[in-house]
Length: 347
Ligand code: G3P
Ligand code: MG
Image 1: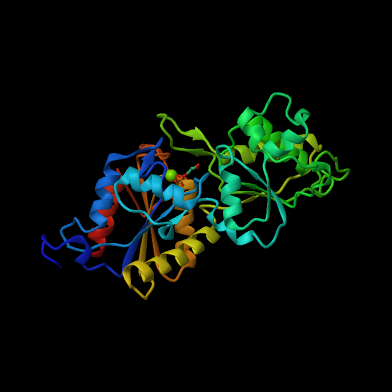
Image 2: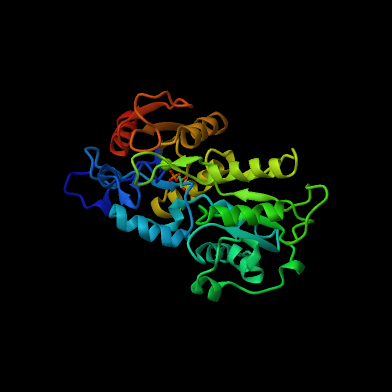
């Protein structure tokens, strides 16, 4: 171990383990840092009794901005430098689907942000609900576009446009309008807006960037999330089609694919940033939502060659005194306790 006076840049890096962090309810709540999070990052960056730095990545189900923009926010909130090379959000793995579809509808987020994210990934033709409403304002009787939305929305003849897939990138800002448009397409003849299928089995595939029914924001109690929108869409489809099932697809935690993506990112990050060329023996995953974070970590641990160790904190969705739906390796109060627990287990 280095002396306490060694500058952080010169400290050795632990190469046998790493941390991965959920964001909402662990590090941030309602746009503000959870105080212990700032301290926890300092510990990982070398301010600890072992004189070592520890590699870490972020794995959130959230989204709605480019990874680069989200990293700028997180850097400011946590007083560290966060690189997109150590960051995955709910929609990040969706970039691997750009070759598969020509024209896609992107739902959620503020203004044009999610269209920009999708185009940044390389999606060639990105439609938003605003474009559809601009073409036919009767689509959503109670949603009128603002002047800004009308200016940004792209006019085209949607009757001639085949939507090949729907991607819900971030939380809807207008559930009624967005659900209407998703269902219009799910019930359409082959993805053409304005048509109505006779069989209701020819709509485009629908991808959600995660399936969290609730999440931890500024309010004391949990708030409805994208998984709740997904449930509403599926339920209403069944109701409107007299019993047909709509099968939608969720990305994000707890999906195994998301943890596999995280493993590749962590491997690359350890190599490029820390010059470590071997996989970690243990990855400590710190999360607040048993159904996504703990379930996903435990499930992946059973499949993965290295150990994935789940740590549940009490600062978010999980409420003290309740039985978590999925049992973590350990439950602690805050993310700082989680970091200390992992380091104690290692050293
Ligand atoms: O919308 C984001 C939320 O559902 C979860 O974010 O960081 O807790 O995975 P996170
Ligand atoms: Mg969370």
